[in-house]
Amino acid sequence: MLLAALGSAAAGLVALLFLQRLLRPFFWDDVRYYRRLRTAGRAIRSRMKTGVITFVDRFVEQARRSPDKPFIIHEGQVLTYRGADERSNRVAQTLRSRSGLSRGDTAALLMSNEPDVVCVWFGLCKLGCQVAFFNSNTRARALLHCLRSCGARALVVGADLVHLLEEVLLSPQEDRMELWVVDTSTSLKGVNALLEKLDSVSVEPLPMHESSSVNILSNFLFIFTSGTTGLPKAARISHLKGVMSMCFLRMCGATENDRVYITLPLYHMSASLLGIGGCIELGATCILKKKFSASQFWKDCEKYNVTVFQYIGELCRYLQVPKESSHSVRLAVGSGLRPDVWRDFKKRFKKIQICESYGLTEVNIGFLNYTGKIGPIGRASYFNKLSVPFELLKYNPLTYEPIRTDSGRCVKVSKGETGILIAPVSAANPFLGYAGNTSMSEKKLLRDVFQEGDLYFNTGDLMLQDHQDFLYFRDRIGDTFRWKGENVATTEVSEVLGSVDFLQDVNVYGVTIPGYEGRAGMAAIVLRSDQMLDGKKLYSQLEQHLPAYSWPWFLRVQTSLRMTETFRQQKMKLVEEGFCPTVVRDPLYFLDATEKDYVPLTKTMYDRIRSRQRV
Image (cartoon, rainbow, N blue to C red; front, side, top):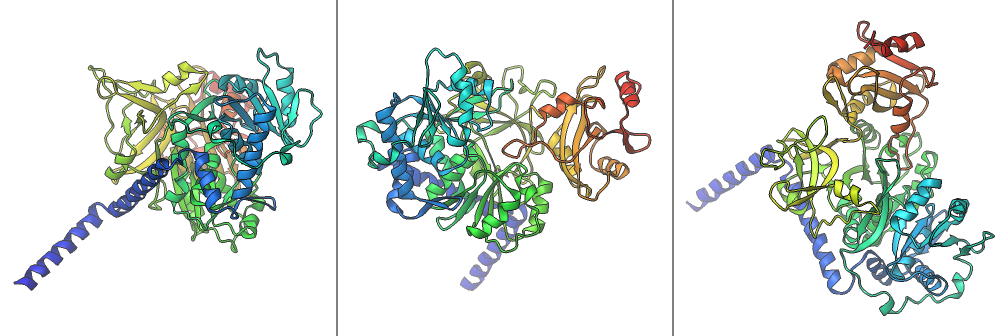
């Protein structure tokens, strides 16, 4: 009887496991990831009870635990955890004695990637300042706008960017801010040299009363995001977000023994909070590059024994180079990897695991694809939604505003439908808004979404949750355009075009045609070396995989695509230039539906299109 009962139980268990694998194949992956999240959360709470509260507190703790371990390696220079801690102490001591900065003030940092970015950043934090990261490509009007919007009392500039101070020195200001250059001397009047007497000051930390504990929900950093008006917005980053971001590399599977290669600019959250912060959390070593170089990438990976690298946007596309077989890279972590690039990368670099993710600067919501499945940015399982609550809303295809019922409530999409991603604003997920821009801050909030009094953050991103609970990024509302009464998702079109063998790179956008509603599709393309444009083959690909309203009516053949400093495609200039042959110097083509081919766009054809004789 007992054996029969045990046999029945075993058979039942096997049947149950079979059903689980059939119906919920990623169940145990979800459980393991949820447990890692819970463990990370408990570790943060435990440290806070001992006084290790902030991002910099965690760094100081690691510096005490592993003082002689290399923290940052940059162009042959090795900075240990203790060395970085002591140098940041010197920065704090110098600024305390020579500047007018005090606790609560904002100091702006405008520097290229180098170890002193981290040392100055941490030194300012130890002084009690809020730090604003400025894009090193910021110029003229935008630079002054950024200074004013975050209320900076001081601007610290790297030695290689000191020429940018001329814009600030020439501008009339009511309250003259302090100007510092990270150099041993300067000839500019009104500018102080931070390193002039740095070696003569104490390496000891400031007295405890000068670096007292902070509110975990208060402002830690300002990180600038792109603005719809063309001017950047200063997103406020809480101390809580800073600390939570440090767990990213650990959640991806990195360890203290890894050497992490960072080529992304430190003024972005990906490199600073996720990359540098992730190394600190693990006690790992960061190989910091001034900027990305495809020709040096694998050489550096081999030279420095890199095991993990960070990517963003299209960076992985540029790594398809002949010599990369002798590296030790096992893990690539980042976001914005297109499925076609991902697929090609995996074919070439079979032993490198990809950890694709999604996150926002402004709030704590984030996803991680820990399964290895190509395409999704993460999972939306029951367990994950316990840790990262979110919803996808139905939206008006004309205005992209959430649809509300007669009672004023929003409507959730069903699985398989695209919706706007929103996240509840709470103590665990605060939204501190944009500095100096109350109206823009308010626009990001949705009130009374599902019940009276609730509050959600509108990401402006379109997502889809499939029936296996995978999440897919569909588009950013600003990139989606409407044609023939239908919404066109640029990412979907780019993915289809990206699978064409003679195309190396694609950037899809919409252009206006006089007399027509909406915007017609256009694609800037780069041909692979020794390849020609095959319009008929391209037409066949579109016909097989996309509805007609999604097809690009115009092609612009370029030698390379314009990219941002974080390898995101630039669309604004392309949209402005449109498809006029007298404006655009690149070869232009028009979709001839009768011939099922792309034909050269002449001035005569352009005039016929504008007069509504074509399209």
